[in-house]
Length: 495
Image (cartoon, rainbow, N blue to C red; front, side, top):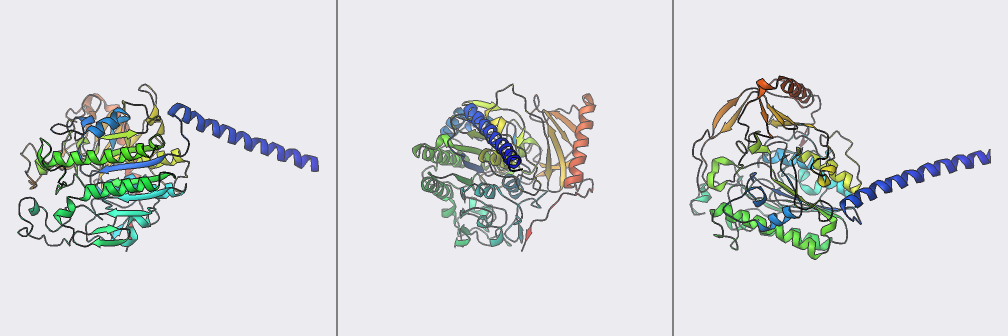
């Protein structure tokens, strides 16, 4: 019997060692294919605000230079068909940090200064995923997932936080500040003074225009210092910039520098910030151990005209689920791992970043259901490599407005806001939107990225397939357009 027990023990030891061996081979295969990886990678996410598809050099910006982003793209990979869950501030951030459609976690629209809810404690964020593996974590910038203490970053896995709790226009002086002296600007009713927070404490209860002009610099300085302090251990750094959300502000070092006025100046400072962070990684000698992702929370706020960016060649902008609102310029950089000067045109979404990063660092996925998938093969794939197609949902507030699978995007009948060809506002003052209506329309985004030619009649089978996918989303996440109650919805955190 003793010999039998010994033999069984040897058998299971052999099985375990084989498992460890094949796991090591798998990890080595990724390292060999991707480059030398001595440890789980650092993760840096640079998340812009209201930056349009064509607002950086690698995606066609005009009137100003973005040399650091140009270099980042030449050394990394452009993702040309990358999406956010919803084209508005809080919703977009919820999708990025939880790996879920924002519908699922109960965060819709943009939470205001009077909001009494935020991201629920039960939702596991990217920061908490990274904490599983001993990462240092920090958020420097705009949070916008609840400004009350229970919802702030330190309660969601971040070790450090410095920034604004919500959008900089949620401020009593906007939009008057753009064209009136500060002492003449009328205060909007219902908006308290804008606070600046460090950790869980308000360190400046009344942010001024002069303060706002320094935000990009302050966030960058915090990011650089965090990298230097944590260069010898793995870290997750999240920098959700306040800019280029209106009202626009820029520091003196970039004021008047571009040919495109204040917006161009602000974009040049954003590019400078990217350069500071990448240069710090290089100086610390950890660039080959760091994945950097640069993207935006949604498209441009078009009613602000020359204080907004461009989504060309895409249709519409922020607060619509046409691609101009929800397709965002994205660059991923990881020297020695992501092939240089390459592009990926396969659809992906911010909800995919959490499971991808969990895979890359060897962390467990949340116990609660998430919606994203591991897209790590897209970071190193060749142009012809196969990657399974996924259907993505595009909600605005509670409405399921469209779905995309592969090259096809189907819009369901809905109303949307538009300028309808009218001139936009200028110099910080917006014009009012009108409303348009779209029916059941199918677009082939491979040939028609501007969503201008309805091809539904020519592809009835594609329409039927995407309608069926849409119905599955409705049953899971609901749809106010069809008055469908979703079965998979969760509540946000409440005071």
